[in-house]
Image (cartoon, rainbow, N blue to C red; front, side, top):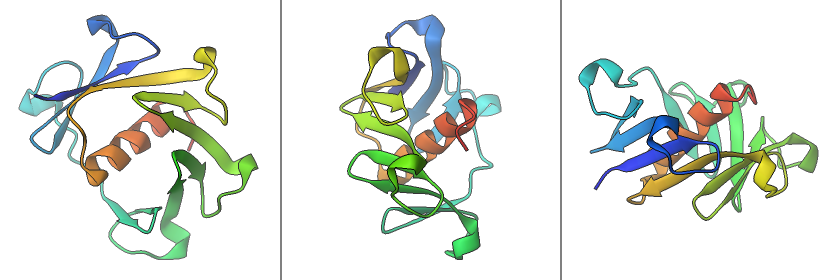
Length: 128
């Protein structure tokens, strides 16, 4: 079974923005090769997410810790851009339903797939 990511609170097919299948991420509802997102190069190391192949501090774009996603290098509350709670992703620090930006349904994602989806959601919602 594949994993589907929906924009907002509800599992409505018209709101599906990403589709993850066999380690590949696609835009939209289907796993067409033309919709495959191939240009994400992220390095994940100890909760730190780097853009590119190297773990240089200047390349660090996100920090993930305890279901919280921070912009940049540090886990300061003022830098928190997303909160992950169960299958829901919220913008900011709180799990208010009005702040829910995504719903993830389906198989468990690998760490790399999950971080890639968080990166895409942060970009889509202008958080990074």
